[in-house]
Length: 228
Ligand code: C5P
Image (cartoon, rainbow, N blue to C red; front, side):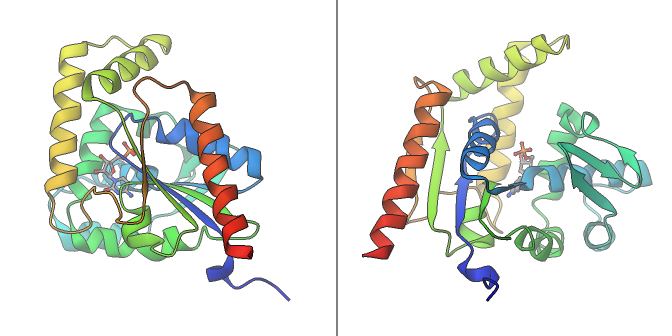
């Protein structure tokens, strides 16, 4: 008998920008053979599509319509919007800031909800974002809240950009991260916050392998615990 979507296990990984969620989630999903949802990409896509359509980033009704009709395909690591590969375009700081502006709008969040929940497919899902454990998958098998100091996160972002040959200023990056954190945490609808039943992990002094191992250990303990 096929599994119903609610019996498909979910690992929800939430946390602020550049906390390492993306890398950790991808690695955990790969190890377990699970699907992977980068929910931030959906908010970035709404921001990009809105800018392309000349919409203001506060026009809630129009943006909600745009979000529910988004013609997007994910596959092989690529993101295709309206038949155009936008994998790199949505990673720009402009799209990041735009995403955090459209993300305050309840109509946009609601429009993206079922799209995110549809990623819950057997054998399992690793979902990363801001409200995976609190709103989108409140019954997730394991919830993790990944943090790191703003300075460490700005430093990581700086290195990523430099590696891509993009010029960046660490002080500007730190200021933008703080602005984004403030907007993500202060919004009234689905703010960035730790779910009460989430495990918190500060990644500041840890390597990727260590974090991935820890998440897999916690997940396996959860699964073993639910089978006794
Ligand atoms: O994770 P990423 O930096 O790609 O997300 C971009 C923005 O999208 C975040 O700053 C946040 O405002 C918004 N977002 C959100 N809820 C999510 C994922 C992202 O509000 N689940």
